[in-house]
Amino acid sequence: MHGHNNEKGKVLLASPRGFCAGVVRAIDIVNLALERFGLPLYVRREIVHNKYVVNELRKKGTIFIEDLDEVPPGNRVIFSAHGVSPEIRTEALRRNLQVIDATCPLVTKVHMEAIKYARDGYTILLIGHRDHDEVIGTLGEAPHAIRVLISAEEIDGLQVPDPQRVAYLTQTTLSLDDTRQIVERLRQKYPEIRSPASADICYATQNRQAAVLELARRAELILVVGSANSSNSRRLVEVAMTQGVPAHLIDEIDSIQPGWLSGIRLIGLTAGASAPESLVESVLHYLGGLGYPEVESLGSIREDVEFALPPELRPAGTNSRERA
Image (cartoon, rainbow, N blue to C red; front, side, top):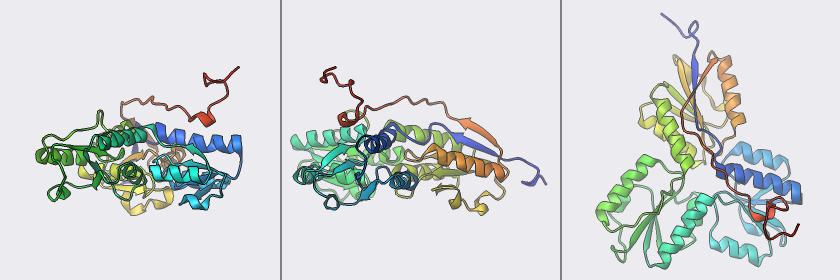
């Protein structure tokens, strides 16, 4: 009897959501490089996996390229937040490119772990999506030592040279739950398996998944703002669905299908780590006009992680080696 018309709906807004420290840093790096060095400025691959962010930077004249051979020798190029393989660094040197590295420090940590385990003669099982920029970069650190896998089913058929010398690492943006299950299977098969010193799945991925679980306890539908190639955003949709709540990945308001909202009073809203807050605000505004004027914030985790800029972009005087 109480139709949707006379009962105001509500949006439950997840916190934390949206930009992580590595994404903030990567976008800052491009904007500061534009200010300090001007154009032309090249970025190898998408700086972060978000259409809107990339388009905004493109409007400022930034040139996004797939491969380094598209950059004329001597020009300036930025490596994306997802990191690159050593091969790419070597090529940049060879072509005399001026590199600014926007690799997230938490991705660099995984690279360092890979190098260490490979040097010690371990077979490294890298849990992650083979075609993801981050995994491609990590794999390049020790291609002969690393096997990439993404499901527990792949473990049965694994053959390694020495079952006593096996380690696992993971992509930073995976589902906590899926990864836990894969690691359990790995431990059964390789009781001696070594793990990363601290979890490779980053703080932001973990916090955003925890916030979605909290949303899922009350929301009847969950919308995740993020692009289709954003791994951590796609995982948020999956986490919601494991709780039996329908969930959709949306790039912006155009992606919202009115049919999704029929009969729904409580909508959960969050955003992946590369989605800007301005997109979240436009979705809130749009939903407000569709009969969801009320917004309630959900989630108690506070994030205060910040990463330093690379040396090329630090303000003068912040580097101890510089003379006043």
